[in-house]
Length: 144
Image 1: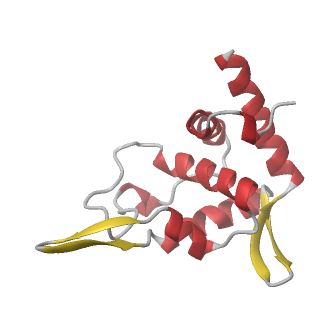
Image 2: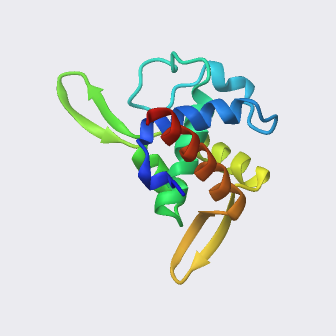
């Protein structure tokens, strides 16, 4: 059985995004067409289905690194902000986008909130694990 760890991350995320487009629960909010994904960006994303790509990437991240929260996802999707004549500095990505993605995935039953000792965050459920492993299996068959 092929898992998420056995296939290329970019191919897995793109294939999972195409699968998520068919599900009604994963619609981009109406402000999704106009919003930047962080302070470090100058323009909104060019890809029309960027919301599903972000959902798939967050689901994979929760699968591999869970329990994980909004703050860690903000750090992951941050980048260098140009400061004019001053040196560029690192800023975190949008917390609202990460939060809304996590809420949609949680509502669909792909992830859930847990607390393991002092670590609080979201982990993947068996439904989410089954979904990602099935997509990974499809991707591995295509690349062979």
